[in-house]
Length: 156
Length: 449
Image 1 (cartoon, each protein chain N blue to C red):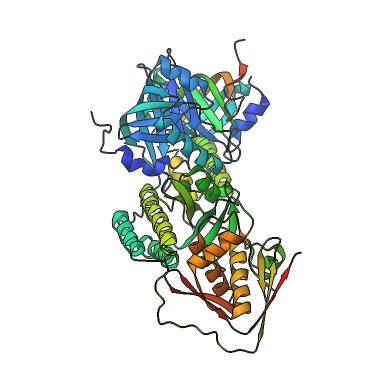
Image 2: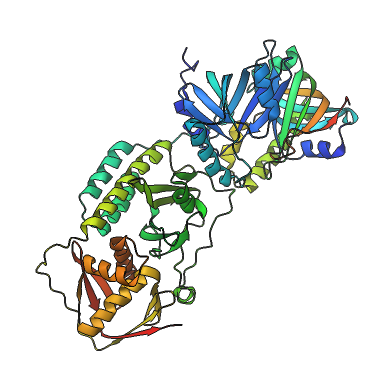
C-alpha cells in the first residue's frame, strides 16, 4: 500500500499521463481520464480512451509495463507511479466515474484561467478501457531538487 | 526519409513550441520499462530535429542512452490539438551557439511559469524526428485564424515610411502607425535607453490613455528591461497564469505631482507581450514593446518582422541624432508666442532637475534641465529659437555626464508638454531647430530643495 496521501492525490483533479512500450521497446504516450485506488489500496484503476490512445492500449495488453504521472495544474506537484497493468473494457459505473473526473479537471483548469475549449480536446473517454495497475514504486516528479526521488517501493 | 508520415512538418507545429502548454516525453529503459514526464521546453533545431531541455529528469536522460527511442506529445497552444512525435536520440549539447540560443529562450519563458532561475539550462538532448501524427480529438479543435497579412511586405512598407522621415518625431510615428495599420497591433511603446541612469524612457506610445510618454522602467525589470539587458527579444504568449509585473496602472496627475514619476502605461488584462531590442552599431538603444489581449498574439513571423523594424528604427534614430546637429539654414518661419497676460509659473528643482509648470509635474533629469535652460535664456533675452547644436553645447557645459540622445530628449519634452496641454510648448522648426512658445508671462524660479 503506497499511502493515503498518494491515493488522495491521484483521486483529486490532477492531469494523468501514461507511459508504456512495445516489444521493440518503442515508448508510447497516452492520457488517463480518471483514477482511483482499488482493491483496498493495493492497485489503481484508470480510465483511458482506446479511440484516442490505441497504441497505449495495445502495449498494455501485450506486456502490461506502465508508468503514470499525476500532475497538479496549480503548482506542478507531480508523482510518477510505476508498475504492472491489466486492461479491459470499462464498466458503465467506471465510465461515470471518469466523466465526473473530466468535469472536475475542466473546472480546476478553468479556475486557473484556461478556456474550456482548450481543455476538452485533450480529454476523451470514447471507447473507454479500464487499466488496473499494481504499483511497484512511487517517485517525486515535481520540478526541483527532489525530482526523481523514490518515495515508496514494494522492494527495499 | 521525410520527417513525417502524413504530411505534417515541424514548421506546422510552431504554436506547440511557445512554452504555453507543457509537452510530454516517454522513454523506456533497456528492459522496456517506461518512464513518462512533462517537459518544460522543446525547441526546433532544424526541419527534422528537436531539442529537449532536461533539467530535472535524470531517468529520461539515462533511458535514452540505453534505448534511443522516445515519444513526444506536443499540444498546439492555440487550439489544444495534440501531436505524437516518434523520436530517436541524436546527441547531447552542453555549449555552443544552439545551446546559448535555447538557454536564452528558456530564461525568457521560465519567468512565464514563475520559475525564473529554477529552470537554468544544464544540457540539451537533440532528437531526430521520425514521424509526426495528429491525435484525434472528440471535440472539434478550433479553426486557426491565420493572419492573411504578409509580414515581409508589411515590414518593407514600414521600413519605407521610416526611411522617408528626417527627425525622431517622424521616425517614431511612422513606425508605430505602421505597426497599427500594417500589422494590426494596437498597444505599444517605444522606449529609449538612458544608459547613464540605467533606465528606459518611453518616447513613443500608441493605444494608451494617458500615453505614458516620459515614464521610466529600470533595465532588467519585466520583459522590457530583460530585452534591453539581454539585447534579445522577449515574448510571453499566455499570461493568464502569471502575476503581472510592475505596478497597477495608475491614472492620476496628482500622483505624478507627488512622486515626480510618470506611470508606465499597461493593459491590466494583457495575455501576450513582446519586447524587441533596438540595436544599431552593436549597441542596445531602446526597446519596442507591444501587448495584446489575445493569447499568442505574436507569432514567429512577427518576431522576425519586428526585429527588422526595430533595427531599422534604431538606425534611423541614431542617424537623425547626428543630422540634427547640422541645423538647416533658417527658414522663413518666424515664431511668436501668443499674447496673453496670464502668468506662467515655472519651478525648477535643482536636486533632481524636475520642472513644474503652474504646479503640474512635467519632467525631471536631463530633459528637465534642458527645458529650464531654454526658459532661462528666454527670460533673460526673450529668445524663442534654439538649435540642437547650441543646446547640446550648453548641455555639455552644464552636464558633464551628458552624452547623447539630445534629439529624442527634446522629442520627449515636446510630447510631454503637448500631452499635459501646458502653456509652454516646443515646436520643431526644421532639422536641428526648435521653437519655444510661452503663452503668458514667464515667472521662473529655482529652488535647491
